[in-house]
Image (tube, rainbow, N blue to C red; front, side, top):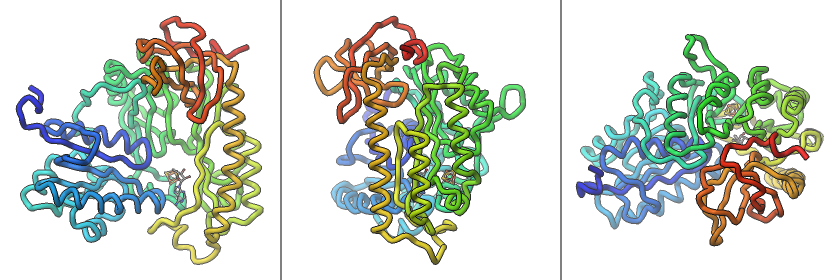
Length: 462
Ligand code: 5AD
Ligand code: SF4
């Protein structure tokens, strides 16, 4: 019997900030709480429990949490018994500070302990709040999480690896998510098969350092990501595989080769480089040069000529000169990106870069560099989108559009594609002739429908 039928239903609202791994974690927290009668709702009003699943990557992301807590406090005043929990990376980094700054918070939990949520809810009810659990437990949470029974979207996420041992000097992730940990191939394959059985057609493999994946394989050896991708590509009904986010140092030959000969591996790669200056890359502890990165992109383009690149950039890292910034612009021009995220450097407490006492670039300088970089990246993205017009691309349809009769899917290059077509194509992949570019993505018309998955090399040529 469902909780709503027993009359014991409680409403759970989860607000997710930050990366796709947080989106995945939020879904898993809902799975953990479902047996207690919690059902997900999409607004905090009237909720019995609100979880803010937070991001600490840049200062702005963390500050948003405190303003949201201010709003929630007044909701809680009107609703006796409402439980407020703060989860994710801000919780991990600032647990006690949150309790102090926002006494309305009952539970603070880190990203590695949410399998213990039921126990925390019970403790909070007994003690009237004040529960803090930001351990890095010895037992991996994946061993304790229930299997998800919820229907998946057409595009699903699957965490295969967590944490990071790279320690880039600007980044909080190694401190908030902990050391690198990979799930086993068997566990990942089982979850992927469940997702496909529940309707997923494309799976994005997630990890803070996803290409550093080294999970135990069925042969007792550690498998790399290239091998895992080959294995998952054998699952019937799974048309597309993506992975994010990667580090250039972990782009090994096996993975590059997989881009060449696993058709389900989508020809789009988010490979953050952060800077194009060797001096800044060294200061950031990235352990590769700008030319190392160019070589990786070249090798990927040899095996998969239609691969599109995406990246992350930071401007105004301490010590960055105009010449360093010019090197970044040069790298962007050399590679040519289909998509990119760029940020002003934001000092994060506890990271080595934040402790530097000299060389900080002033705010105006950061703002100016960011504008120049974003103009260049925007121009590249527009050119990439424009170049799609007239091409036939395989599009995986995911949902209905805003206009009647319209459905929306994604191209291999993560472009949203809007098409007038029957709803029953949702969940299938079809060839679409791209006819235009709008501010929301691409428009197109059905070119053919064969009912079977189409891979880009079948239709892109010509
Ligand atoms: N300041 C600015 N940007 C940052 N990122 C990570 N840490 C910082 C920081 N302290 C960016 C990087 C990373 C992305 C997820 O966020 O570009 O790839
Ligand atoms: Fe952060 Fe990525 Fe560097 Fe790890 S590799 S420290 S997650 S930027």
